[in-house]
Image (cartoon, rainbow, N blue to C red):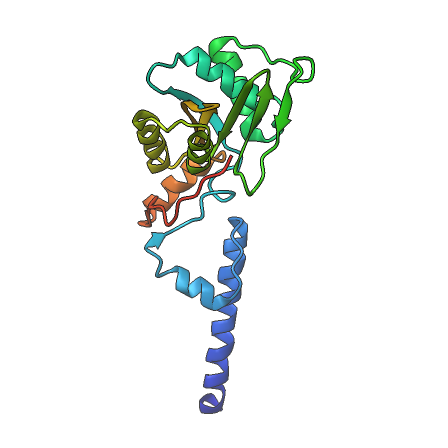
Length: 221
C-alpha cells in the first residue's frame, strides 16, 4: 500500500504547497498565477519594472525651466504658460502652476486675449497658441527643432544639452519656441507613487537588486 500511494501523495503535497504559497503572497497583495510561479520567484535576484503606472503615477509634472542663451527665465515661463493655458493634460496644468508659483504669472484667458489654441496631435507632437503675431509652441525636441527650422531658426546647443540631460535623468524634456526662436526647455518629471521607496527598501533587504537602466527613450508633449 505504501509503494502504491507514495507517488500520489507526493503529487498532492506539491499542489498543496503551491496553493499555500499563493495564499501567502495574496496576503501581501501579490497575485501568483501558479505554484510554479511561486517556486520561480524564489530564484529572483534582479527585478526590472516598467516605470510608468507601476512605480510612478503616470502623470508627469513640470519642475524646472531651463533658458537658452539671451533669454530671461521670465520670458520662458511666460511663453510656456501661454502655450499651456488651454492644455488640460496633467503636464499642461503643471506648467501653468509652475509659472504661477515661481514667477507669479497668473493664468490668463486665451479667448479674452483673442488667442487661438493649437492642440497637440500625434503628427506634430507639439501644441501651443497663436497670439497677435506670435506662434508659441511646446513639444518634443525634434518636433520643435523642425518647427523652428521651418521659420528660419535653430535649436541652441544649451537647450539641446539640457534636453539630453533631462532625458538621461529619466525625465521628459519639452522645448518651448516663439516662432524661429527657441526659448528653452521644460523638465517634466514622473511622480513616484506613495510607499514605493519603502517597498524598494524591503526588496533590497531581501537581497533583490533593483536597476533603473532605461531600455528605450521617447518624447511626448
